[in-house]
Image (cartoon, rainbow, N blue to C red; front, side, top):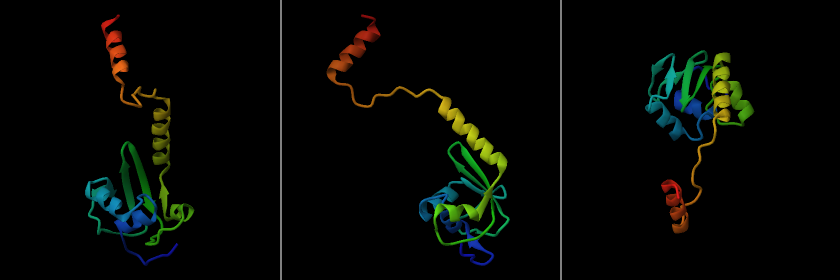
Length: 129
């Protein structure tokens, strides 16, 4: 963990904390309003400091985190996880969403395009023959 002083750009920190694979992905998420600092939409150049509260939206998942350490170096995941602390309710909410997804039945879908023969059989089935 390289402490870079007391201020760091939010896009750089999100990349270093391994929330996004690239800085450009972090930049797009910030610009699209999926990242809030203390409940306020920010720009990618916004500087953060330890103690800031950040809310990240990934589809249905929502991370409520507190910045603990600033780092502009992207390291291994165990090191990156020491840069922040996720709230207990955030962890519980994500676990609940994961459990709901696990319990939902899979949506039937074609894994291939039906052949002419398959389409005839589908039509027969629909007509009730």
